[in-house]
Length: 417
Image (cartoon, rainbow, N blue to C red; front, side):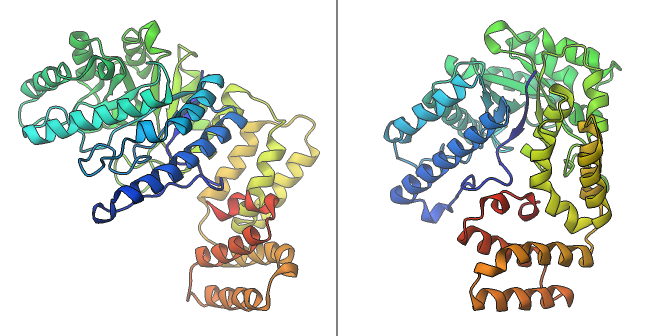
């Protein structure tokens, strides 16, 4: 089993992606952004390798306007060396990557222009994965699309337009249930006619269940038969509803007990699980350490990254976790992450935030300029009087840390969560 995350890697330097608007999409800008984004992608891949993350969704935005006519750059050729190097790292690590076109890539739209744009977008995603040199176990994920007042007719339109795609794209395409239009039963019916592998999305299934009432396990078992050997392991999407948010909003972090309950009910432990969650790689590592590896050796490394964030939420929780790690003969990953989740769920506490910021400042300030010191003092006062947010204060601290190349603080999740 592999557990992975989508598109963005939190708390890792030089892993941010750049974009531009259409009016600025000159060839020079497209080239510069493509080079920068491929470098960021390589940083993400290297991070995943270091952390035993073997499932990763690549952002569709690596190439600016990748399927738009304005982009006339032959990026697959011009950046061949970078693509080859990244692809070799992915393959050597036995990492499985995917891409997921956005909501406007609709194969069954009623307007021919939209359908043609969708086909071009799928070709772009296929070209990207081909440039990496990865095989067809590395997939392109797609929703069926709209209903347009007649689901049966719209289903037939999807199948007809799917058959217009080049075989190389069809070999990579997988389909999933969505939260409004197409249930898992609908998608499985489409798969019967097309042989497209099906992804089961648990949250979409909760929000849009089919008429036939089966357990999640039975629906996943039905999906399993759609995956052939050349498609790789069956893959599912897992997410949790964010409490108090609109229906379908993903949670800020995966609550580990809820995930473990789901994981333990899986009949097939060879399923690959893509997490869809706001804190991305952080939840992936949490789930890997707890459900798959169930080890404690990495918890001290995790604590080094999390501890100032926890302190910024609660000194009590900080002391509890610190004591637990130092006193327990046998550390349990689940207990550790549950305490971190408590910190996530706490509301902002001004006193705790100032306490954590001043502790970090005590490490940083000795090498700071007088201007940096004055700005820190000014921002602390501004935060206390609600004249600025804690994020502004954290950003100033991070700039000082980066300038001084303090690696052990640069990687602290205090700055990124």
